[in-house]
Image 1 (cartoon, one colour):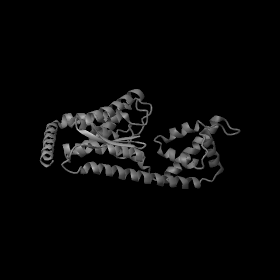
Image 2 (image 1 turned 135 degrees about the vertical axis):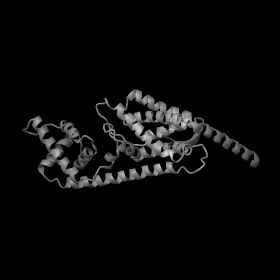
Image 3 (image 1 turned 90 degrees about the horizontal axis):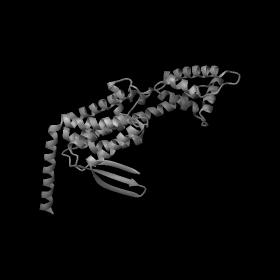
Image 4 (image 1 turned 120 degrees about the vertical axis):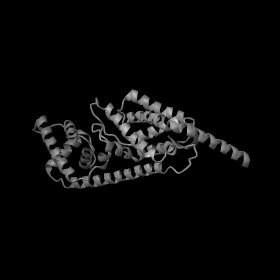
Length: 323
C-alpha cells in the first residue's frame, strides 16, 4: 500500500526553484553514495581475493560458522560491515565473542587470536579502501558537528528512503518557499537540519549507544509544521494505491499534519528512538518549523491569508464570467 502527499492545492506565483534544487541535490548525493558503495564492494572483492593464507581461511570459516553464514562472499561482507561501522574495534571485539574455540586452544586464546587478526586485516583493508561517503556525510550525535548536521540531511539510506522524503518535502516546501521567500528559505532548511540534529544529540546524551543519522525527514517535518502554521486549512493533494485501487484526493493540511505528527509522538512514547527511524528528528522538526513560522514569520501569515482570499475570489469571478 502507498499513501503519499504530492502537492498543496495552492496556485503558486512562481516555480519553487529552491525546493526543486534541494530535491536534485538529495538525488545527486544519494547517486554518489550508491557509486561509492559499488566501489567499496569491488574493492572488498579484490581485497579478499588477495587473502590466500590458511590463517585467513580458518578465521573466516570460524566467524561464518558463528553467524550461520553459508554464502561464498563472507569475507567481503564482513569487511564491508566493519567499514560501515562507527566503532570498528568494539564491533570486532563483540563479533569475536560469538565464536567457539579452535581445537587444542582455550576459548580465551582463540578469541584473542581472531580479534588481533581481524584488527590487523581491517587496518590493511582501510589503508587503500575508498572513503566511505555515507559515513562521512552522516551525523554522529556525539560529535555536535555542524557541518555533518547539514550534510546528513541531504544523504539517505536507500532509494525508498529518499523517494518518500522527497515526495513529502515537495508537497509542503514548495508553498513554504513561496511564503517565506527565496532568501529566507535556504536559511529555514539549514536551521531545521541543525536544530533537529542538535535535539537528537541532546536526547542521546544518556543513551548507551548514539546511532549516526541521515535523511531529510527532520527538515520535511519542519516544513510541514511551518506549512500548517501558515495555511492550516489548505488542502494537500494525495494519492493512494493499493494493489489495483488508485485514488487521488485532498486532505486539509492540519489533519494530515496531526496524523503524521501524532503517529511520530506515539512511536516515540512507545518505542523511544530504537526502531530505526529518527523519531526525535521528526517530532522536534515539526515543533521547530511551527515555532519558526509563529515567531519569525507571523507578519506573513495575514498577508498569505489575504492573498488566498483574493485568489479564491478571482477564481470564482472567472468561473462566473466564463462558465
